[in-house]
Image 1 (cartoon, rainbow, N blue to C red):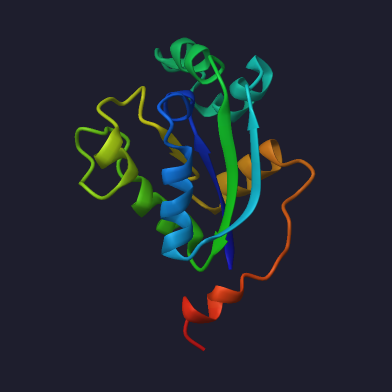
Image 2: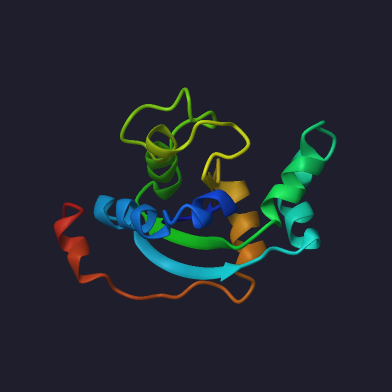
Length: 149
């Protein structure tokens, strides 16, 4: 089992998409093991997006991500990182296929509804940053109907 970080950004929260987004991950078979809603501080946002600190869009990104509430989530399942990224779709909503979160609801690169970890190291870093207290362990009884043997 793998755990990944997913965040509904302020545009997704403002547009009332949180429930629909959670539903997609649950219906796929991933298990929600962490959930919190908050308005990110500039410190948290700048640490999260530090990899982009030299990019020209960085100041606008920080302003956007701290502009309102986000919903931070931890999802667990087999290959959770790649599964989540397939559900999310490509960064540019205009290029994302129908059936993906961004393909169905995003029209822009900047306001693209959702963030998902892009690899194991990133997921570990982001989960530690957004869930310093850790995630919860629980048994999802339906998993016997999701995975073979």
